[in-house]
Structures are given as C-alpha cells and as structure tokens.
Amino acid sequence: MTSSASCAAARALRPRRRPPETPAATAPRDVPERRLINLAGFGVCAALLAYAAYAQLHLGLDPCPLCIFQRIGMALLAFAFLAAALHNPRGRGRYAYAVLIALAALVTSAVAARHVYVQSLPPGSLPSCGAPLTVLLKFMPVWGVIRKVLTGSGECGEVNWRFLGLTMPAWVLIWALLLGALGVVANLRPARTGPQFRTTPRTGASG
Image (cartoon, rainbow, N blue to C red):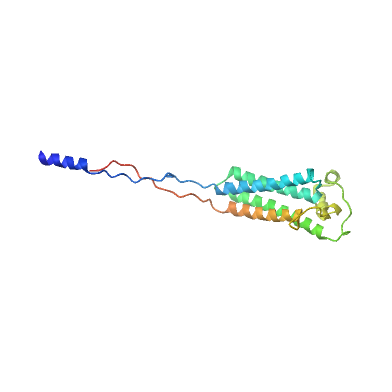
C-alpha cells in the first residue's frame, strides 16, 4: 500500500507536458495573386479610359477615328482582365484568358503604333480631313471602315497633347504592351499557395 501510494503521489506531482502549439494558419491557404493582378490590370485600363473621357469632355480633345479604335481595344483588354479576375480558373481556363489578354493587348498596340507612325509623317502627307466614324460605318462595310481608319487622315496626324515628351498614342502603346505582358505572365504561371502546416492532434498527458 505504501509503495502504491508513493507512486501515485509521484505521478500527481510530475509536471504535465503541454502539447506543441500549432500555428494560427493550420490549413492550406491560397494566395489570390493571379486575381489581384487581373483586378489591377482592369483598374489600370479603367483609369486610362476615364482619363480619355476627361480629356475629351473637359480638355476639349475630340478623339479621331484611330483614338476611338484604341479606346475600343483598351475596353476589350479591361473586359478580359475583369473576366479573368472574376472567374479565376485554376485549370486550363487560365490559358484562355492569357490568350484573350494577349490578343486585346496586341490589337491595341498595333493601332497605337499605327497612330504614332501617322503622327510622325510630315504635314501634307495625309488628307486634310476625313469623314466621321459614324458616317463611315453607315455607308461602308466594317472591313472597309477599318482599312480606311488605319490609313489615317489629317485629324489623326495632329499632335495636341504630350506628357513627358510622348503623345497620347505613344502612352497607349506603352501601357498596352505592359498590361499585355503582365496579364499573360500572371495567367500562365501556376498558382502559388501559402505555407502548409500539419496539425498535431491534442492528446492528454501520459504518466
């Protein structure tokens, strides 16, 4: 009896070992990096379109047909970024959004590059004026309108806005290339996940 009592007392006085504490983030956590990048791309496109509207309504810079085409391309790029952000596919769907972003960026860049070239031509190289885009769409087929607009006219060759020495089409070209590269890389790269921790089941103290 005495030995049993002393053993029980020794076990009672022995300090109990506490189980190791687990980190707060015990479950795998996906970092929404791709979605954030796509949302950022959409935000930049929306900001560029908003400034274009401000320049037209408050600065009195009426857009030429090439400017309107660039706005359409930037709007398509914004839509592609927004769709990619909302859908946020984890499988092969991200490749489709990468292609859409690349196509929209390339089309916008091509139109902007054409506009930069038209503005670099000497005065008198282009017709002094052209019909408004609405009139062209009314009397010509779509492909004929595109060909006519890309040819350029006098109002497309005017330079009435600069920032840091670059015209507005030059900035559109730069932003379209940057956004296209960012969107393609972000949507082609595999998703990154946060650190994973393995939880340790809590067990009672053993004697």
